[in-house]
Image 1 (cartoon, rainbow, N blue to C red):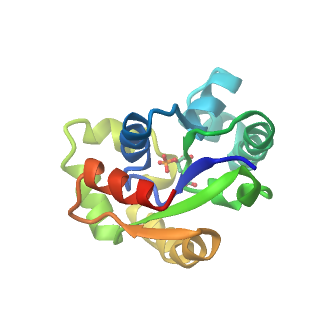
Image 2: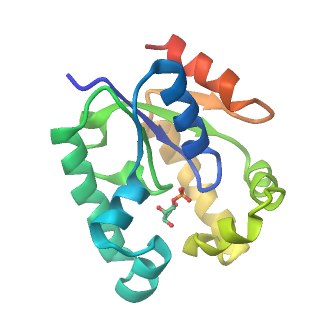
Amino acid sequence: MSKNIILIGFMGVGKGTIARELAKQSKRFAIDTDDLIESFENKKIKDIFEELGEEYFRNLENKTAKWLEKSVENSIISTGGGFYKVENIHKIGKIIYLESSFDKIMERILTHRSAEKKLAKRPLLKDIKKAKELFGKRVKEYKKYSNITINVENRTPQDLAKEILKHF
Ligand code: S3P
């Protein structure tokens, strides 16, 4: 059985940051599905969306998920906000949903020193009204797909990683 820890949740919630802290605390490697896709295509996510479309990107997520299931174990995996929908998500590892309100997520992004970069690289955050709608649809699904839900509001990555590791 794979002992991977998979972090799911909305764009900007802090999946990558928490994954790296988890890796440090548990002495494992952290990998990110968007990074894998960018290296596979040799293109930025934003350009994949613009030039090849969202459906093409979702197919790449499924391809990545199959590779993860076959080839990766004992690692921390952070995912793009829509990755949870891949067919084999439960076969890759134990799923942790990082929960936060939409407003707190936007606050986190907008107060970051590279806020502009964070917004620019996420095509689905271009229109905030649409992003909020997507958030509304996704929250129920994140809960349904995950094994454990952890609220991340007002907590440090260090503290969250410690709590997540208690479940393993
Ligand atoms: C997406 C989230 C992004 C990235 C892509 C699509 C989504 O990742 O995979 O832009 O569907 O929510 P982050 O969650 O790291 O921003």
